[in-house]
Amino acid sequence: MTDATTPAIPATVAQALAAAVALGIDRLDAQLLLLHTLGRAAHDRAWLLAHDTDAIPGPAWSALAARLSRRLAGEPVAYLLGEKEFHGLTLQVDARVLVPRPDTETLVDWALECLEGRDAPRVLDLGTGSGAIALALQHARPDSQVDAVDASADALAVARANAERLGLPVHFSQAHWLEGAAGGYAVIASNPPYIAAGDPHLPALRHEPPAALMAGADGLDDIRQIVRSAPSHLANGGWLLLEHGHDQAAAVRQLLETRGFAEVQSRDDLAGIARCSGGIWRPVK
Image 1 (cartoon, helix red, strand yellow):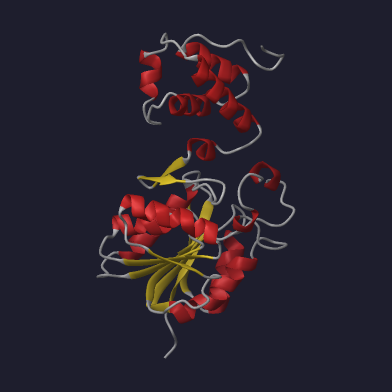
Image 2: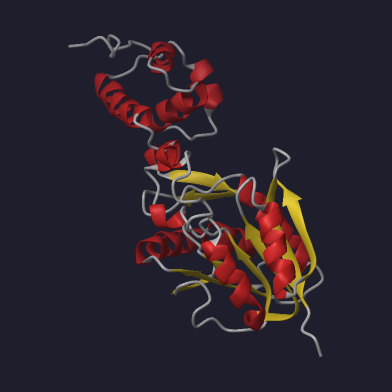
């Protein structure tokens, strides 16, 4: 039985895709969800064209329709697929963690630049979530010692499972930012919460963990705490790198400069937005 918002059960792959788009689903999202439902890999979109006249079993359409309904309600595609690609790694994700964003790859690339020429560097990822930053750095620099912390036991369970599945020896621990952290890190990198309470974008993010998103009235509470505490955990010449909101670069650079960091600068994401800021710590002797 159908209603005004549900099309008749489609007979073919092409009809199923058309039905999903007709419901208001983005075409790429519809393709990914259809591939997932049919047991195909997310990168296999060419298969949909080659098999557009293949029959769609009734149970497959029922499963797809359920996912489409959840997507229309705003649930991220990554949660529906159960995975997200990040910096060449496929990470398992669910509602316990923030969905890794391509913007954060800018932070990883910058961290790797800062590690160039350093032998067996020590790295710390603060607020690791799914483990995205820590695992990407460990994968790119297998000689490094990568530590990662998160205040959420649920998030750490996801991160540890990703590390085990990928065979990457990141050391995870539960802590609030730098509490109990060691010292001597060549790089401390973090994608902390940076959205202001009451921000108009929050309703669109309602399916993701609020603690990973919001940070006080101006969105900078956690960044302030990290900037204040990081120097005692950095090696001489170590870098603190922070992801932040699209309009927060100047404020974050000011926090770093006031704390005494040198070479303070920002990096743009793929959209040309200053998405990360950081500086180097050189203690005064």
